[in-house]
Image 1 (cartoon, helix red, strand yellow):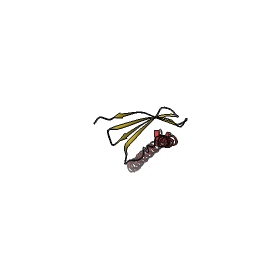
Image 2: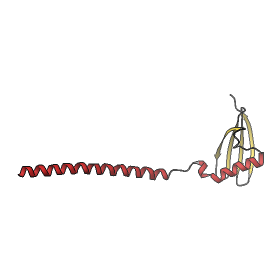
Image 3: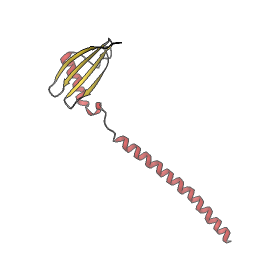
Image 4: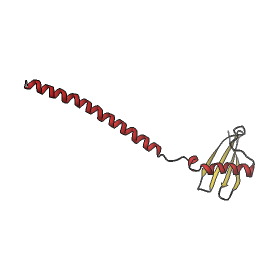
Length: 122
């Protein structure tokens, strides 16, 4: 009878040990997902997100001062923007011809300057 009782306790312990291990594994998995999604929500903003209003103002300044709509995909292949600080930015505009236009833009003073035009060798 004592052996039977001990076997029953051992079986009970082993069954609960498996449940305990499964509970711990599930808890670990949920904790990892929680940490992963918490850190991804606090990610560093991109340049476009950080300077969103300046980005729109920069496009308007180039259009107003030079008559160039850099968002027009029919005329231009694409552009890049590099903000040096909150006021100054450089814009490279790639045309479908082998031509790249460089703009120096000061958003605080509403000034743009076509720095130079460079032929892109193909």
